[in-house]
Length: 488
Image (cartoon, rainbow, N blue to C red; front, side):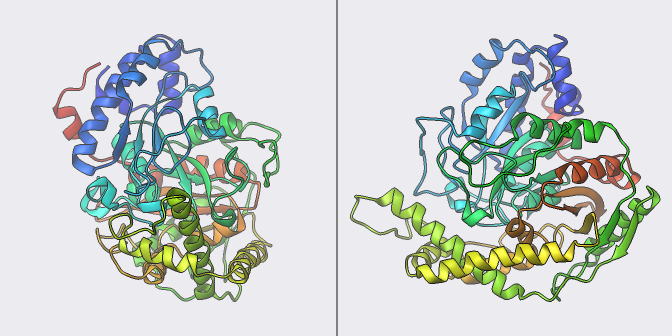
């Protein structure tokens, strides 16, 4: 099998080839590792590697079918604990952090049959909707346009999936960090309902409940099967998403969705939205109408978005302080510019000076945001919105090189106005590749009610068969990868 054949398959198709013994796992792993090196050389997407150990895992793998046995996989460099690979969370201060025990999710990925062989690049502390960490030696570039960002914080993962290194990669989302890079790189990315994917055993929540883990993929059915395999309540967890009686993969495979009432949301409380992003949402709404769904314009409730961003700044800065102080405990020193990028260092200073009262007020604002979103969706089954307010941004547009954390996060909040509120509410939301503008991907977001990931996935599966998706889902770098002759 050559690279072109390998990258034409999604994860389920690849696992079928492996289980039928049509493709030895070691050959799939060799292609993935070769592709990773080429893509990393162009886009700077890969951090830690375990190539030899992963090849040994592939040699010993006996695929059984129904899972992802032998499918090459990448973990995000987000600090998800894995005994296989260290992590930096994109920070020089945390470089080469090792783990004595797997996180629950890392173990579930392994039990699902995935063979992880590297980690993917993130911004420092996963705090940006771009991926430009100093620790990584430069920005992670968008394979559609190397002058633009791949998105963040799962930027390296999105590049790897879009370019064909792997069909599925781990991601996480605390303010859009799966959906931003999915939109920027023209792939599918679902932020699951809070509590569906485990976060233990080392923590119960991330960023006051904003953050969750998931995957990025090129097909809807891949994400659905992953959720079937790794999702489900973790004993002792503080959150649990409602259980789904059928499998998510079955919900996608069925191919039919009862007529839905869909709200079209295009005004994020007065912030500017680029015309290609609006056009993509409008076209997707029309595609839903053609499928028999009712689409109605939606005006959001009155909401103090600047105060929402201020609450996120408080929560993120306190989390920076907690992570840094844990790392430096016993050292007798505070972080310096040699440890942290300018905006993150300022975020640390802000975090250590934040009062407990301010933090509680910020958490309460998140909870109020969840209630606002419930009100907003009261008459709808699903919302459609642009994923981003602009096209994939130029490198350096949202940078931790600015000296003030508030300025950095306020700029990020303008790009992610349709996204972070969904982290606050805990709802499922997916970015779909539904549009192109001058060769650049444009994502469209579907937002579901809490615990109704099945409806988001099922409608995504319907739209995956549409002309819009098929025309938009054309992936980059293929010619460059084929040119070096990647046979198995």
